[in-house]
Amino acid sequence: MTTARTGGEWVVEALAAEGVRHVFGIPGVHNLAVYDALGRQSAITHVLARHEQGAAFMADGYARASGRPGIVLVTTGPGATNALTPLVEAYASSVPVVVVMSDVGGCQPFPTPSQLTLDDFATATLCCWAASWD
Image (cartoon, rainbow, N blue to C red; front, side, top):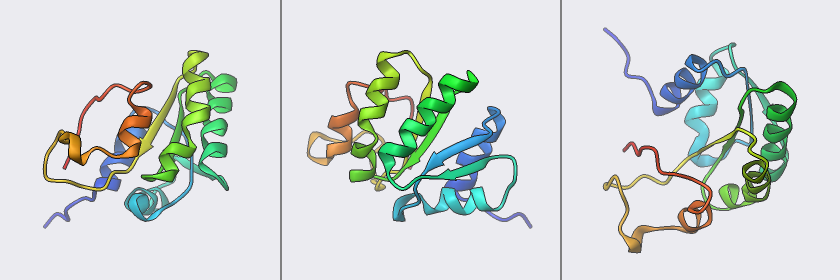
């Protein structure tokens, strides 16, 4: 009998399949499944930051120094908006930084205007919606 995998395990597996070796971030209530999955494997090293802005700047610096995409892992709300300044810097400099941001689940794949949050508005000019999983 196989055990159902968590969303966090899917995220970590996808990152590992892309060759990710380092992830920078801060655990929070909405991304703990990803952190649980990171703790159960050894292919990806997590670098703990004290602030989301610092984590995103670390990912930016890692990308500039290594030539590999920098991955930053943040939670919803303030965690996401705290990462905006380094994301704008990376965007303006064409540095590959990927943000893995948790979401408060909903029942619709694309929110109605009344369901949009500050995260949606703050990141809208920097990001393209690639996919949504519920």
